[in-house]
Image (cartoon, one colour):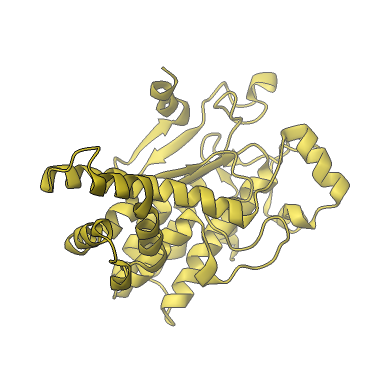
Length: 308
């Protein structure tokens, strides 16, 4: 990672400064490029240090198997919400019909798992009426993968972002092979690798995939590790697909997106850390970029509807 990329990944787009350490060792000091070598993932920290961070900030890290199960629930619900209206409209199925009930209550999970894991539904799975109908729908909607790739996902209090990019087991530090990764961005980029043929197409859809994933954390070392993991995830899927170099400035574009989409925030206030206590940032609410409109918005404004 060159210095230009590193400096982008240290930026706080709300304060227009660098992200803060925001932990017990360094307080509200800004992180600088020369500090990066001091940052260690949780699994490399001393056990006493891990416990202290858990007491101070309720920091806990989730093992990959739990992340996979929860991501499976998210993806299955997303696909079900798209397919079910089509079933009711095209086949006139009622909510209590056997086929609709089979899809909603049971068989749909294995269809979703196959599609998200392998891009294409396997003909061998078409062993029930529900499987056959949904497989037919997927085959007729070849651009569904594009809808999925651009569908937004948010990991709250993201730590090192294991729900987005599962490059390693955050508990043990063990590296996870590319084909076995279960992160939400992993699934999007796996589809991009499977469905695109040219370098230009790949870079377009890979960038859209990155634009669709968000996360925030209070502690700056966690946030930097999350940003770096998301960046390295894109690098590794590119290397798995191509042997050439990407277009000029592509990695800068990826880093720019990450610096907007993964941000530092106190989840209780919607503001940067310590903003209420020291008023270091003029009372600003954290800002993110809506890539569909190109508008900068306050994150807290997006939560008001959900709170009513």
